[in-house]
Amino acid sequence: MLSRIFNWIVLVPLALIGIGFAVANRQWITVSLDPFNRAHPYIKADMPLWALFFCGVFVGIFAGWMVAWAGNRKYRKATRDAKMELVRTQQQFERDKQEMARQAIVPRQDATL
Image (cartoon, rainbow, N blue to C red; front, top):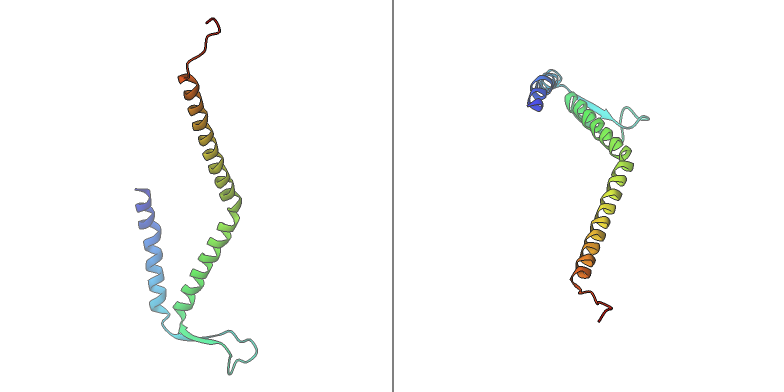
């Protein structure tokens, strides 16, 4: 329920603003990656302004995701270690339970015979 409210209040207006930006900025620009030769750049791309903007947004989102993922490395490692310890403990518990069951089945020898 809360995610639906979030979608309608935040994401829908952002999508409308993005669509409006794309429609208003349809002119084509030349993006050059050569700082030394402006007349004949070595690497260039012709694209609409809105495409450049959205590419920048997506690169920023991806870079932020990568930084957050790298920052949570120690928590992922701690979770993985805890899961491995839990599996070891469960296996040891099963072995102990089987050993106790085996000892309970074996009849005791009385020394009075």
